[in-house]
Image 1: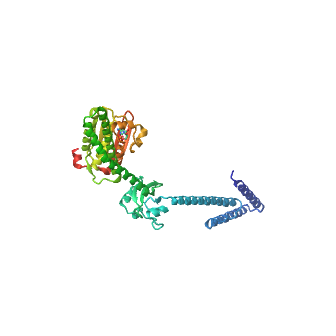
Image 2: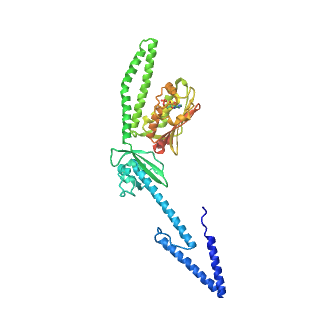
Image 3: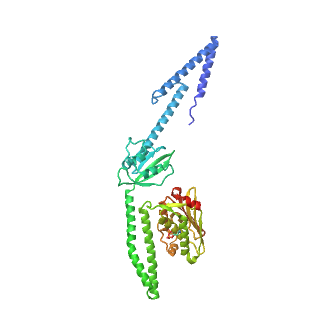
Length: 439
Ligand code: ADP
């Protein structure tokens, strides 16, 4: 609809009035005086309307607008319509905000809105119950002052880069385990979410204990089977019996490796960080790993190269680090055809220290790469049965690296080869001054 335009009418009335005043002034022979008085009266009328408008805006704008005539009636109506529209929009926004708050309030997870300076602005009822916050007493306080836990203080200070979630006991009830995450949004604001994972944690620990116990219980019968089959293989047996025994021996060895890997995984899962962390001489470890890889390669004659560009050390448990690196190196040997090249590289840069194993092996199709570190995930069952793999190697590597805030990256092309790299952040690197001078 085309809005009504008052201006033609206004101009017409103004023209008629001026013409009337002109005629009147001419008749009484006082043209300028009549026009002057007419203009004064016209201005006075406008001024009185402006005064009514100002009074209406200053006092209560919810009342009906003042009655005006002509152009002023249109102006009053326009302003009134605009105000009505704004009032409706504000009401709708308030209703939406209310509904939004009610839905967040109904959430079973704790949600706390943190301002850019880290102070708490708002939270839901679950936050009161799980984190012990009290409204309005705690508004404007910092969460780390209430949640007195060094791990939490360190977590909340990791500003705006979406840190990994942490698990902590609730400050109000130690038996409740919370999974706490920070979600950045808006302008440097953050939302803290706390989920009660007590049941999940209990189930996970039951599963871990079960796997650890079963693996442990299997160890003794397996050792007996291995021992007896070894003794019998050496005895004077018919070829068919010998073949059967050799099969038993092979499978028992495979099961033994599986049990050891399962036990290692459950050990890694039960303790968060190893106790005996010390600078590990990675270059020396890589030299020894290369020798072991040469032995494993045997008559497959892989071309094994070592490229050590730094003497930088890593703060870690030596046994764990060796286990992670050896898994990658031995995989390279196992999945590279005879005569292929394998390069172990150790270097450091502004991001930290890095270890990589590059091979010219069979490679891995891209769709499998994101799932390789899952337990028992195999690209092709035939491949790893041939190599005697357990399907747990890369899961162990991932778990070990996580304990040092390090990351595993995998690049691969089928038929061309693969590169498995471990990236250690700066705080995990240790530069021995004497060693670096010598290097
Ligand atoms: P496995 O004990 O079976 O080797 P891993 O967890 O070590 O188990 O590896 C998972 C799968 O990833 C393997 O089954 C294999 O298919 C693939 N894989 C690992 N390393 C390589 C590699 N260097 N080249 C090609 N495939 C690899």
